[in-house]
Length: 256
Length: 323
Image 1: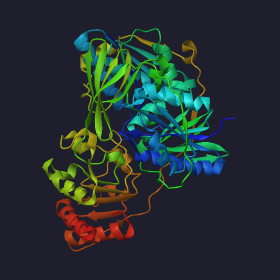
Image 2 (image 1 turned 90 degrees about the vertical axis):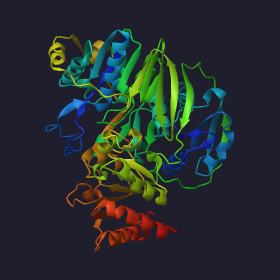
Image 3 (image 1 turned 30 degrees about the horizontal axis):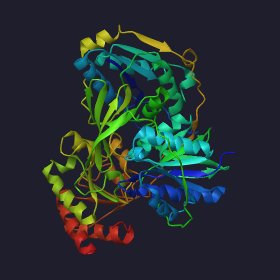
Image 4 (image 1 turned 45 degrees about the vertical axis):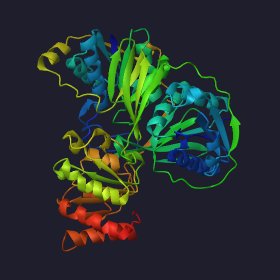
């Protein structure tokens, strides 16, 4: 099987996000960068499919020079090769430009399944997987928690509000990974050593023929609106506090 | 010039979903500023009778695409029809629900139209005649104003954030002739959640437990409180990773982002990744014995005490108030 996993380097979930004073972006000087957690599920599923059915896994990332670390991490987990789409013109890429760059890099490669994370935890857009599928003209299965490969098709489970769907789709297709799909492995020390020698192609937007003009633009970033200071409920014991809380929720907040 | 505000209605099993009314109301508010008409796109099989209900929430026109191939929802088929309607009518703005279906659909439509889309917005406004979509990024650690260089400007709106406001309009039906390509995906089975609980993303009240719950069996006291309040039980990542609660219950940056009217956090310290998933809740209550827990900084009401004593008392007090 030819499997592709798309990865993005993002700030760690514990990162404090500070908006620059002029609202033009975030201050990334103190940030620890990691592989997007949802992409890790995609890489793991790609490796599992390969181990069971044979084939190889190609990792693709759009990102600045530091994103190479994330590609190497995926190679250390067991993928065979990488493509790094690296271009300052893509630094402020929106989902459409990112998906276009990925599609341009993927066109011409053989592929059966393409994995993406269901969303990246930095911009939280959750658009790239579906856009990539459309640009390649193949079906998409988004927010998947279980995948079974059956010849020229996959069967997946997609949770929706109040139900889950069992869907079968002909290959090739894009699958976006949700937590629950698997437990991603850690890279082993020999894996990390081997990853250093695995091939990674670096490409820029011009080489891929991708237009970099964004369709949706972040005009301004701001910290979240401040919440008014809360009230600590006082009382002699738990029963009194609970009764006072219930009263506040009913009479002041009108929440119950 | 592009004109008209379009909402992509969502229906399942013969009924419109609540987010459809939220979209219609948000669109009406924008349209009253721009002077546009509000149109809804309603797809499925035997859906025409639902059009009138959209009219109650301010929809002037409804494009009804009735076709067995559009029921139940399959991404590529719906995307094909929605994109065609938006393009043929040169839509200025298109609003989707940021539900599982709406997110799946909107991104595909945006790619078909080579257009800009802002996901999971918590506010939409008009500035200089154009849409500005406000959305959380980094799971709510900051907020972005998004502007669009293409039409239609597309946004998906977070469920439960925009009020559904009645404002009766005509909802004149236009039937659209839909030709749909053969589909490569097939739904084999729909397994319904039989618990009778509302999904976390749609719940009005959430009672959530974290590491302080100490184990899976202790969630029973949260379920009792949730039953009295007609709410849904959620959990922190710590509780899910410990195997106490299923993945679908997780609230936070790597779980669900929720915005209920009332969020009661029990034994949750308030790790930044949890706060990210629930800080758009309208009223937040924290019950925790550690007075220094960061959750108290986000809470409208805090109780510093043992949750195992407070929660059963709260359940009893609420039962009495609501009786």
